[in-house]
Image (cartoon, rainbow over all chains, first blue to last red; front, side):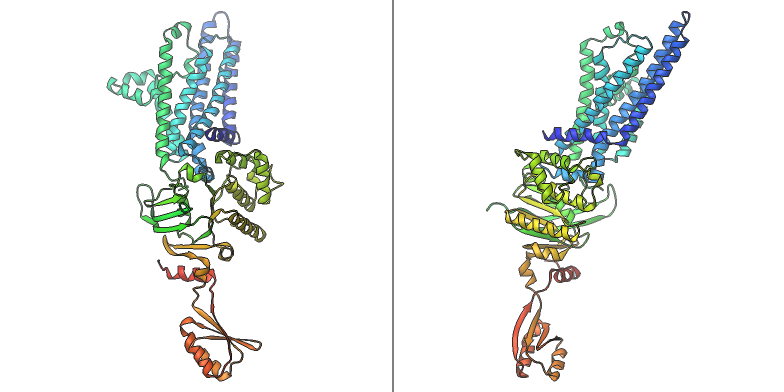
Length: 267
Length: 310
């Protein structure tokens, strides 16, 4: 009940935050970019270049989704770091924590509030994906739940990482760290980078940064075919998602442990 | 009777910047108790350690050494927090909420079950004179209004103990009087109030006991009336005082004030016997000899100025 109250209040606080409006603006710009790109390639399509145009279109939609995916990761990191950091900076946490509430209740409420925001974002992204593929006359093979659950789990992991970091660092620094980590992951997942990494180093990197290979990224949804999906049985999805959720849980528990004895006063 | 409302035992707290920097002692082996049902003022100059003590009490920070208890529970324990209403010094609320939504939020967190939350909230807002501003966003409130809302927020869980850090800060004189009356009414209901304030004249009007700290050390604690009675001056009233005798009295270090037919002589308590004998020997009609109470402000300045440690 108390956790839910904090979660709803946290979600409500996001709706009054200017960063969310900026995010919505960037989201809309990205979407429009995708629409223009799709319409451009559609108008350029002839019977002789249909396959080439389709590939270019998918490539462009993939880039739009890649940008939206990065924006989603940063949004999750900012929301988690800001929801705790801003309360400590402004001092609103004092009146809240004076209530009969355990510290982990507070963090759990904050985290749930962030997950609610992430859920809205993921649904918005699914809408963009469907609209762009429909406009481009493309067929999406990946089932809806894959489009919803995979990004949600990945953002949940970023939110948990941020929540842990914000118990130790300033929220702005946390978002910076996450941005650096995101770039690092993008570098590592690129085939050229992976081929250059020795195998003894690759496994620990995958374990420490499970997002690189385990949790499917949005830009890869478009290139999925029925054949490629058939290669991944249920067990693969369950393992991948469980690994992501486990990662998030570990980070959240680390956040709880770090938050348990830290000062709630603004330094 | 049970455990005292608040108990501090040898509490020590030192601040240090992360990784490096000098260690700054904030509290040094502070020990005191606040009994149930009393109004206790926690006094000290800026930086004395009042807010640090209250933060330890509320479980916001941990003490380095010593122990503190609220009704026998450790700070931060949910059972302790169920019994406490807290008003922080630098009060901050969610600016996007209106007063009603904010109090509803705190009511839910307090775990208090009431038949009609809206009725309770309306009653509380009326109590702190914020009725009519229920739907105004907190971000648009003035400093005084936020302070009033903070008091309503502290009361929403119907706590047994109120910990108020500067409750009248930002309020106009009428508002301060209302808060004083509210605190006295709460005491009459059997609540315990532990407050810090720099307005000593107000403290003097409402408090049963005072605890004075300075530079992290306990300077003085005790019942307010007993402390004030410890004045070190005496007032001697006589019917008439010849000029020659007046000179001799003043040479003893006393001050003389002529007030109509009466003459008021104020001297140190240590010199009262010699002065009284001099007046009797001079055929003066001594009407009264009364120990003078000092004001809390005088006592506070003296103790803090001396840096005396109990």
